[in-house]
Amino acid sequence: MDLLRRAMHGGDPPFTPIPGSFPEETTTIHDSRMEGNVEDTSSGHSSRRNRWNRKAILITLVRIPFVLLYYIMVWTIVILSLLKPLCNISGFYKKKNSRLSDPKSQLNNLLETLDHESQRTLNPSVQDVNTPTYTFESLYSLEHGSLAPDIVQGGYADLLNACSEQCKFAIIYLHDSLLDNSMQYVNELLCSEKFATLIKKYQVLLWFSEVTVSEGLQAANALKVRQFPFLGVLCLKAEKKIEVIGRLEGNLDKYGTNALENVLTKGHNKLVQIRQQRQNLALQRLIREQQDSRYSESLRRDQELARQRNAQRQAALEQERQELLRKQWLLWRKSILRPEPTSTGGSACRIAIRTDGGARIVRKFDSNLTIDEIYAYVELSMEGLLDSAEVNNSPPLGYEHHYRFLLLTPVPRKELDPGTTIGDEPAIYPSGNIVMEPLT
Image: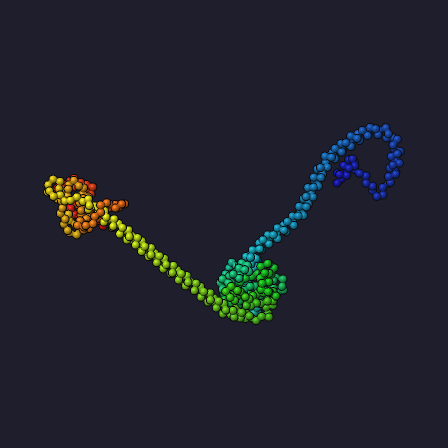
């Protein structure tokens, strides 16, 4: 600031009156007396003074931006230092709220708080009937507590779904840390051996919450809680309807020692009936599913049998058609069958054929024909069509005939090719024996 004042007064420090100093008139009179003496030297000083003023103004103009920048930086640092604690506080609450918004995190925080408060409020030197048998951590710690498997770690809706699906009792404990006797339920009831025995005996689901969180407040409004701490017992009333069958509110001393056990005992019979109904429904559903499965299997077998019968029927029809075509082809083959040669020499070939039934056929064949003539004669003979009056002058269309047997020479054993000319086969020409062997 002093630098700014010096810049405004031309580079010279401003005159500040000091209390008790001489008035300005004295200086004025003295200056008037000396005016005559300095008139000669004023002209020389004025030129130097003008140069000094211009230099001071130039220096001042250069310094002003730096001074302004300095003060801007100082005030920026001051403002940031003031806002930093506010940012830290805001970030802390955001982090805390995000951490506690998860139902499992809320449950962990509540159980840790109850454990610390239980240890703080208990006096180990005093032993009375209200002193808990177990510590809170040994029963309700989510890591190693004996009742940890029975604790529902979700929200209030998850508790209702678990109670309905598993058909079990559910106990809700709503904690209010602002009360003077907030730990009475924890120390005198929740940590007692009797309470732990009831939970294991009736397989009760447990759910903890506090009224300072939205989930606990929602449960308190739904259950119409009037006083805290609150402990309520939920049970199925119908298939999908849940009701409160017992509640402990406010001071625990106004309730009897067996109040909770009486509620569970009374509601257990109704719960057993609902379980039996569910088991009966499940059994009926299983029976229906088994009946449907057996019906589906029977229907599948019937459809498979019908398909097989249809396939067999189609195969039989196809076989009948093939037999008809085969017979038509044999009748046509009979129409072009060459008669037996009458001469014994020349091109005649005498062949003796033994069938698979033991019959012996002796006949002469023209040696210029193929062995297929012998195959056709044997098949016509076996089918009894040689003397039949039926005639077919043309082969059936689209039919390819296959003989159902083979013709072999016994010594040496050799299969005769239907396409070979009889005269070219030395095993049977001019005479020979043939054995008929059916195809399997």
